[in-house]
Length: 318
Image (cartoon, rainbow, N blue to C red; front, side):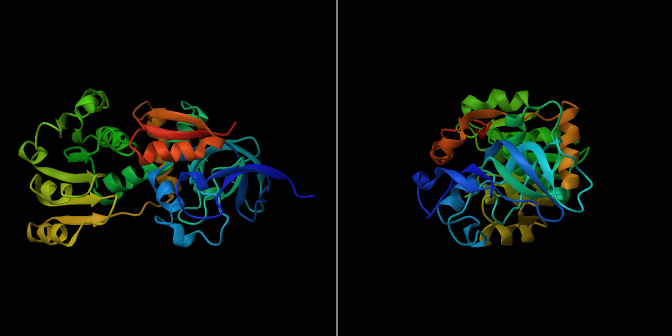
């Protein structure tokens, strides 16, 4: 007899209310190289909201009904053939199955073992679930693309946001000089994360203050990209994360001897292990703003889409 679980599923694309908690959903079985994870908590990200609504990565999700969610933290309860990295009882976390069907908003999920890392010892499952997608995006923007290290000057837009607050900490840990933009009520928070300079975008134009920037991590987009080019020195790179840089920004970057690129995050195990090392060393700490039960996935999406979320939003499963 097939074992079952609770899972949030959607039978159509649309507003948050399409997310419904269902009982007696068939529990998945791990295939070769996979593990079955008992999910303790699942992170919620803007891409979840876009996909739920029919945008984002919805084309890769297959037929409805589906269960979304790509950030999880939990315990390995079963291993498939060929798995050597984990054993039953291990606590793990990671960005799973991205960009295919995630399945994270559920009590159990199957994952290729190489998409997971041991959960940071210093974090709870709720905290850990808020880390993978945003930290991997920040790491790959700063390190893989930007080659951030000692002597690098970094500018992070939206520095108090779910991704931005981790980008500030990662850049700082890599030895960079870090600038960030934030609203008035978030300036002190960004300073506390290690930013050397914080520009209140409601009061000043950042391009009149930031200078000699090597790497821009832009989580805001719009006119920010073109304005950011004025702060950069030759050879620098602008990483535009919400959307690819527009034609005008790309053309101006090329004229100035700069690069303007986009990035699609990859579930790289080595990067996640490097991030874990920073967390365990006390150099990186996620800010969890809202924790909701699994059955309130709809409310979690509303918080993100209405801009009410402060820090990361996480669903607590057990």
